[in-house]
Image (cartoon, rainbow, N blue to C red; front, side, top):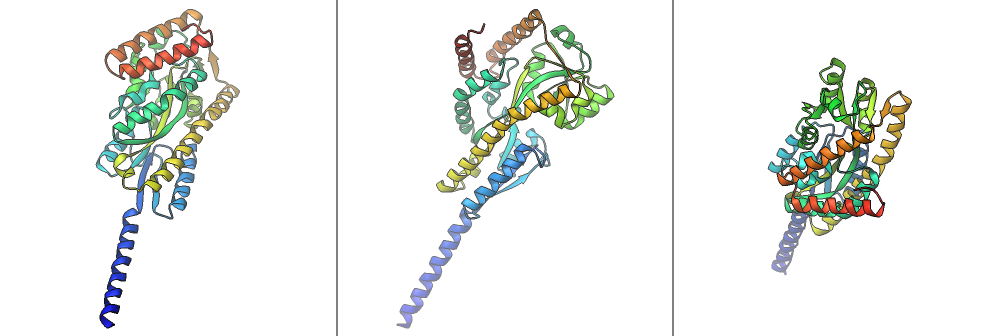
Amino acid sequence: MGISSNWAAKVGAMIALLVLGVTARAATTLKIATLSPEGTGWMIELRQAAKAIRERTNDQVKLKIYPGGVMGDDKAVLRKLRVGQLHGAAMTSGGVMQPYPDIALYNLPLVFRDSAEVDYVRARLDKKLMAGLREQKFVGFGLAEVGFAYPMMKDPVTSVAGFQDRRVWAPDNDPGALKAYSSFNITPIPLPIADVLTGLQTGLIDSIGSPPIGAIALQWHTQVDYALELPLMYVYGLFAITERAFNRMNESEQAIVTEELSAAVARVDAASRKDNDAANQALVDQGLQWLQPSDAERAEWYGIADGANQRLKANEYVSAAMFDELIALLQEYRSAQNVNP
């Protein structure tokens, strides 16, 4: 009887240790980086998603978020993701180009004319981009619009030639922006985002490309007086974690993380357009003047961009297959709307 009881006690202890071991292995802390500071839409949604994930997984999956660029720019974050120092990030499309060039597909200069075209294409291509990202060992939870970057400057300019004479800022480490400007024979001045306001104040630069909400949030609008009604480039971000970190979770946890983070990104995406509309009106109220290019000037802008995009395709900046599908969708939409392709 004593032997039996002792044996039962040992078995019970072993089972308890196994259970504790399984629980310990299942616990996961995902270290997440973002350039967005506290209080922004991204951070509000990430905090909300982190809380929901923690509750729904009974504290087995936690998100430790590093906001405000404390982990460095997109290039530094990508390096830390590769070595496992970080597990996920909210990044710009340009930051993800190195492992997956097609993620910059929507960044091509003047490829979209308005938000309706964006919505039509994204409804059909976003999932393919996420699938391509997964092939590069990143699990994506969707794209989030930042908005169209419009040329903004201190002096009124509407033509390509006029803009070539400007001192134009481009984000450093953003190949998409550099390619967009070089398409028009503009040699931009690369600067970190944190240095743009000072650059405008000192005259180092006199022109920027920015969505309205970005210009207001970063106070750039205080240094520019004009904006050109030309959607130079569609700006967006995405949230992804490494496949390695994702696979550390069990299937139930993966489903919860996917559901919560996808919903958070979708909310950021939906809110951005409303925020930009409000920011646009705020810019007008504060005296910024929107300029309209003439028909001939507009045709020149788009003609140059079309040629540049074809060269980018030929040089495999993005894959030919995805580029062709994008252009086919735009032609399909414009034909249905009776718009000149």
